[in-house]
Image (cartoon, rainbow, N blue to C red; front, side, top):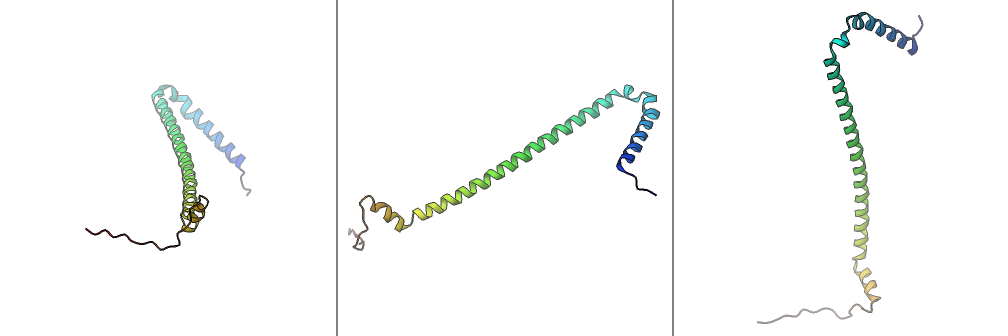
Length: 115
């Protein structure tokens, strides 16, 4: 026994469908008498296609937004690390030294006001 190929299987399936159509559907003129059902099924098919298209659009939009969110998070982390390095006292002292300000050699003291 040989293994059937796909072409043979599709050929057999097509011939069976043609026979079914010729014997059952075409002889009774079923499509002409039930045009309302055909119209209803067609409108349902169009509705399914439309809704699946909308779902695909939303999935693509969600994917794009997730990529943008990852990018923004990485930029946020980079900015935060830069801010942390800029706010160190040694870095601040280097920056203000360019302006002519120097760190005081005297220790700070507390001013107390008596009532």
